Image 1 (cartoon, rainbow, N blue to C red):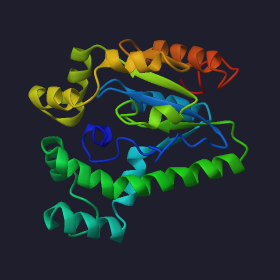
Image 2 (image 1 turned 180 degrees about the horizontal axis):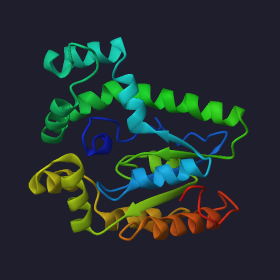
Image 3 (image 1 turned 120 degrees about the vertical axis):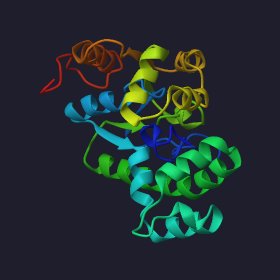
Image 4 (image 1 turned 45 degrees about the vertical axis):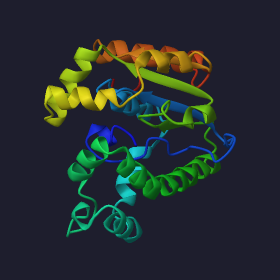
Length: 236
C-alpha cells in the first residue's frame, strides 16, 4: 500500500515485489521514493523533463482501477460502496478504510499488485525495445516492501517532517493529525537511509527551492552514470 497514491488514493506499495529473488530487467532501474510530502512527484517531473521514462506505480493503479475486473473484485471483497456508479473506485473511502485496517489493506493490495506488476513489466519491455538504458520506478513505499532489492540505484527524496506535514495539509486538505497518521505508517527516514546505504543511490534534500533540488538531481544522475549531463533540465 502506498501513501496511498499522492497520499490520497489507495494503491500499491510494492508493485515490483518478486516472488523469490529479484528479477533482472533488460533496462536498468532507477528507484524513486520519498516519504509523504517530501516532493517525489516534483522529482519525477524533473526526470521526465530529462527524457527518462518514469513508470509510476500509483498511476498504473489508478488506470487499472477502472477495469471491470478490479471493480468487480473490490465490490465483492471490500464492499459495493467502494465502487462508484459511474465507474472507478471510491478512492477517499478506500483510503480511509485501508489506513485504518491492515487486513483490508492487504485485500486491496492483493487485487491491485499483480496487475500493477504486469503493467509496469510491459512498460519496461517497451522501454527496452526503444533502446532506453534506464527507466525510473516511481514507488512511494519502495523500502517498505522488497522492490528496492531489484533496483540498480535509488533516489530518496527527503525534507524535514514539519515541512512535509505542512505540504500535505495544504495539498490534500487533511488535518495535521491525519497527516501525521499517514506519515507514521511509513518507514522512518533513518531506516530508509540505512537501506539506501547498501546500494548505489542518493538522498535529495527538498527543503529548498526548485533550482537547488534540480542541481542535486543533476549531480546524482551524473554520479550514478544515469546521464552525462549535469546541466538543468530544459525549462527548469
